[in-house]
Length: 236
Image (cartoon, rainbow, N blue to C red; front, side):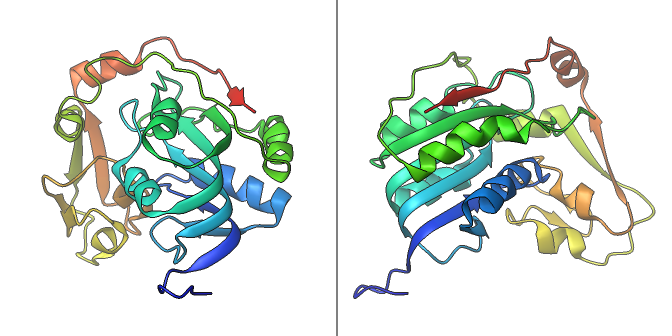
């Protein structure tokens, strides 16, 4: 439905940003429990919500750029923020989201999931998120506390990712164009990435020929060997 200014409106919805399906799985759990319509962040036509559940991954201990853009352009009366993180430091994204944008946050969580560059276990304790479902149905404002964030985490994030992870095109590539079709960053053509690439690996996981591989730099491998965190943190 459109209002008089042409803005799409919906009462309740779930929106996700997900390249390796970890945040999408969380979004689908809430869709099943709440019965809300669920949308990929790139496809949702709405910008005006009564109740919105937003599921997204942590990028370099921060909000992904697409999530920042979505929050800046939307009107939300009651907002639930679900941040998935790859069992490393989750940073301070929820606090920053509440502080920067004017939406009323009613619930939030940092959810430990499989890291993009590791073969970790997925987060399967979905029923532990039930208290958040209840809070969405009976919303009231909360205050997200500040968490630790590496002071250098925002420095040259994209460039650091590109140096830490190399996307490799193999001889199996048949130039089908699927990688370019799924890449929302316009960062790859026929298996060859450009400087827009954020190393989300969506191209690799969706390539029908399995023609893409990735290799980690020595510093990245050392970082990923650090002690993992399995802490589910819920704010309600």
